[in-house]
Image (cartoon, rainbow, N blue to C red; front, side, top):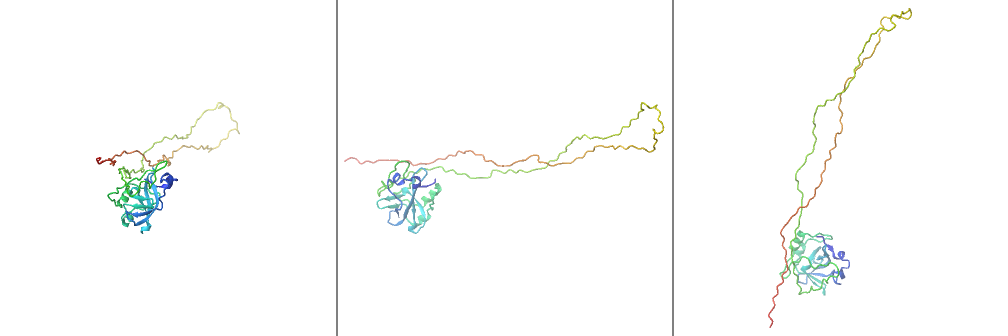
Length: 273
């Protein structure tokens, strides 16, 4: 639960929430004594505008820090500009308080630490919420908070769910080489010599001297070729595999039994005389 400064939530907080009063600078005293421990440095509300804590600077008491005081554990004397921190009895408590910083988020564990450092007198039950300021004009903070005024806190349990990561497995992705024999058919050509012998049509014609040339050793050379096969291998990228993770989101329903305090009012009237 984030805490917001009152003046940031209600820019006109003095009239809208405090009924024209101002609490900043009030002196803070331990318990019901006159031992001053510091001053009111700020006041904060939650996201709904509920008045939750006073921020007290305890440097005056020799403990240089700022702490949160639950509103319901304090008694205000607006005429004397005093705040009595009824649950603070000694410096050791203040030293064990968690430090306050602007923008702090208060969760269940944080409030447990805070309440663990508070003493709780019998007539000062642990409060949780203070008064609520929503919209419009809220009652004065000092109104009704006089010495004989008492507060009663009603507690409720709330469900705080958390989550953490755990490894559910591992996927190993690698490569292996497979070997196979591939056959391929390649058409080839092969030359051959064909010799044809024929008798010319004018074979009976007489050839005169000078037309005929008798030469011994005359040779005609013709190259005979054939195609032969050659095989080689080429490497290429057959497929690209991309490996990535994606997050699937779903909602897990949890349930638990919670307790809540309800207000009971019993009246005991004296008989009329």
